[in-house]
Image (cartoon, rainbow, N blue to C red; front, side):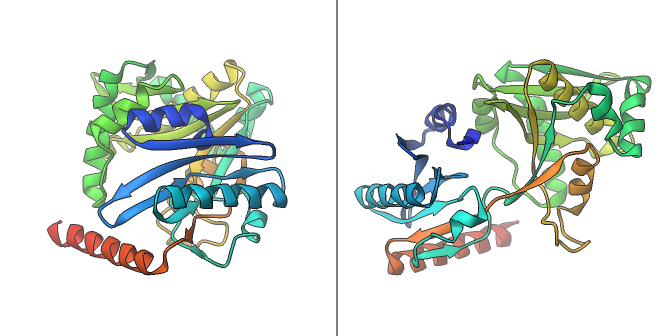
Length: 306
């Protein structure tokens, strides 16, 4: 049973460090990490990229265990993300498809071929940028010092402000970097850091996570330098797969907001993986409707303020 990092005990340690209450359960045929989310509108359980199950029978056992857990914590609903679309067919009638929290579609590169083969599978543009980035004066370094997260924070704030998005807090990102599975990559140009990214390693996979680049230097191959360094480092460490994280769906229109970075991620070679998406299993219909209404009002208030 493949275990994504978000359903592992090391992820439970991260959530605990972030102040979250969690429950990890592992039985024959299934396991899950449930995060108990507390809001003003009520509690709910979140099972990112889980529960994990070997078959239909085990999946139903996992759902029964989650239902018992939800009742014990007076949860209004349980938010789950089955690993395969096939498993989603066995969800109860109380399950409702919602917008995806974690990406339903991702892009994964097999790192086991020879380095020359991997490079030959890059697109022409990416291969050219890879071959030329050192000539441009770009260098890449790594660190595990949580204090160095300030560079990623600065870049994310600058980038997200332009796009009208909310960046992760410095405390959140610093806590992530403090975990044993995390490494921060920094891209240097002249005397500036122009790109940064967090990468997580877990059971043979490197995940491309929090990232940002300075758009003032978008003509430089900073992100290509960052990603190629990270994936070849991973290969040298014996890691077998590189997960680029979210991409646009296969049938997405050309104006999909993720289309640009989807094409960029695909330019390194690899293949798509498709999951079931996010579902809410409703335990209390009335409180659930009130919860959703409260969420909509909160989002409206944030939009009004901005």
